[in-house]
Length: 520
Image (cartoon, rainbow, N blue to C red; front, side, top):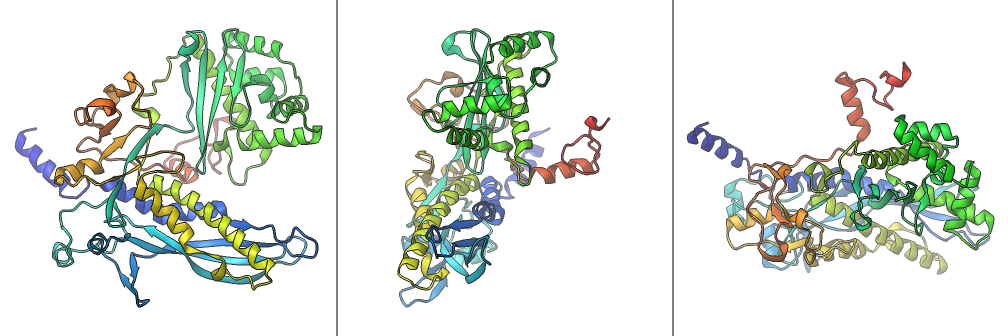
């Protein structure tokens, strides 16, 4: 392709203002679906009213949530449309009111439930990204932008908080819900580990299946100190017989031999014994009933949470967890037998990027939980004073607003991360574009991490090979390549399966009317 044709293609590509497109797409998806999904996860705010005799239970039901466009309340009480330039000059936040349907419901399962108060109420303010669908200047032409003091060439894609322009840094992370097998170098070449970052609804749990030097498998997951014997755990999940456990791990004779060694070393034979054994680990010194209850709670809540699906029976979820652990065990054995290579953590297929919409979703989830705690407290206080229970009096909108604005203003995000939001680099126009397309790694800059800092072959066409800072941040702070476009993660798995089925792909589990190989 000659130089002139390349210029035409390049000019056409960049005339579509796609340099901050990944930020817009992600934030718009958060406003359109992400916020409502977080509210639907929460669904209700329970209270302690009704615990005493003679009192009816009270709870709040959450409904639809909507965001309008940015507005500012003046001193005389009037509300006017707010434009980004005005927010900069007046040192205020470019944010929009958030409204949510809420209903105070009295009565429980035993009594008839009745709605005491139902209304759409303002729950707070959401900082709005300039140039996004909810931005007041979204559809303005160049003349209109100049009239209100905006730069027509400004790419947008950032927030304005207290007059300061803040951009959310795209964060690089290991892919969740994916098995990664590697050799643990701390103990030499004899220990193989398969790990999964199991993620669901903002909760992230690291699950490890480790094959020790003596060939025995151990599983580590949150809320259980140390590690649990693999056979004990899969039996607690419902895989009871030796034959079924071995069959689910592998049919390979050498792997079967390894598994037989594990089965011989197992000290429990039934599901009941396995749950009892686990109960002694997670609640030692407690009564037997409490131990069993705690053991069941731990494996349902903290072990591989991403396998939970709405409407699926608990027994089926547990069996799926057992099958998943067997697949992780197979990965360990294959690595030990050199049937597979260790997974490369720096390979870009094993990474995912958190863009502004994903980061705002994490923030909104914690803000909504804080609001729910405050509403619970206000309702209980109003009930103690025999006041009328109404939505408008128990919702304090500044609770949500503060939890959304403060992290963007300071960069200190949920989960203990810092530097997530940064002041936009206004040195020159290219500096702005570069900052919007910057990418940061969660790894500590004080550690060497030589391999993570290296240029990896899979970064070709995705990450710029030369634009990275010198010094401690070298290789950890990167920039997107010039023509790179970021695809959006598909969260609705069922819709994706249905689409594949309609295209003629066979054997998709969970889709009615599609023949699966298991049916043969």
